[in-house]
Image (tube, rainbow, N blue to C red; front, top):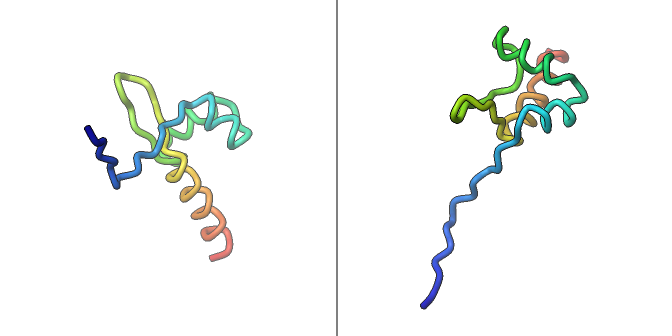
Length: 69
């Protein structure tokens, strides 16, 4: 029996604690950013906030672009 591998790469989702550590901000800051709709993109799964690391990195890159525009 052969296994088929998928060509689709699925980004692992990170929780608020991981992203807060990555960004060096508190989890409450992330929560405030979500409420103000100004932080990195996120999704909710079963009431739990999750982030795709690639989207967080793109958001960070866009901040650099916005500051130099």
